Length: 421
Image (cartoon, rainbow, N blue to C red; front, side, top):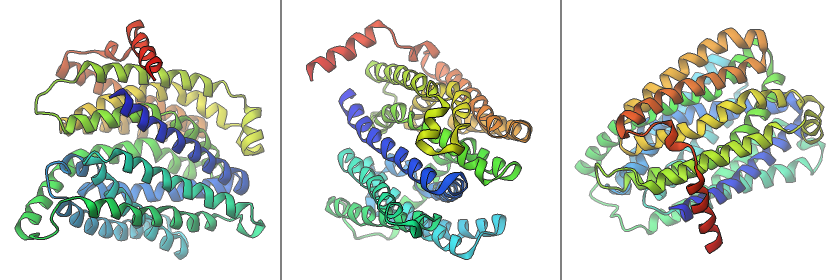
């Protein structure tokens, strides 16, 4: 299991570094206002993709080992197209952006939706290597296209350049993802009654599994909209840099949680969580804490040297987010445990707890403290939802918070595995 976690971590590490490169490129070449505009666009896309998960998402991974892939893919594609159209219309009503913005939003969200559906099905069939390569290709293309465009001349230094780079970054990997899907042995005929039954099953699982993701997104990104409303787009740009740097560290627990989730959905019903999974989780929490300590030690002068003069305040954002970033490592591991057991109700309730804190903190703290209030509100939300999850985890397994605290035996075991390599 640890080998697979390392492989996923390596892919996510490269992805995080390239994502950092994208943050740097958009911040350095477009400034805080341009970076804020890109952040709001990415957030709008992510919000639309969340509702696509109501007939897909992680449930595709859960059902892929159990059902014909084409019975899953067709309804997921149809729902994605519907949600991209409706989501774009909602953004048009609420924010009233330019028509070109809405066109890019609709098309790019659709490309991302189809890509995520294809890769989820491949991951559910344990094609983790293919999944990692396609995910990596997407971020490589986006970073490479932005670098080439921004260094080509001043005429490319616009937010629209990001849109065109994203078309390449999502369109080409989407086409490539169809190749391994077509090679799978699932028959592509006899769709009628079985297709309808699978669609109903997918909808039933998705509603429970994905509702918590919608609420979690609100916890992660609602602060952007609060800051845009109470402050300005420039402040959103500064906040997004601090958030992006801190959330990059989550690639460590996410790698462990992803492997744990895939193993759980392929395990026998009632099979207990193995000790190896707990050990990997403890090491993931330790590595997350160490990475957070390194990041919060970065001085504002270094941030301004890297991103530009406007981004010094991002350091205060990272300091306030740091405690929440560490506790989120525990939350991701516990949440994947309940998701792998199809016990979505607990994850949903935890997300509701976090959202309540986010709304309260956003309304009270952001008008007074600006981007610092947004960071503090996020940390409080992470603590509240994690405490709720850990309490239920203890009730389900008998294991408390100390189950995720690494000890000397865990470090010794990890060192032995490293030496074998």
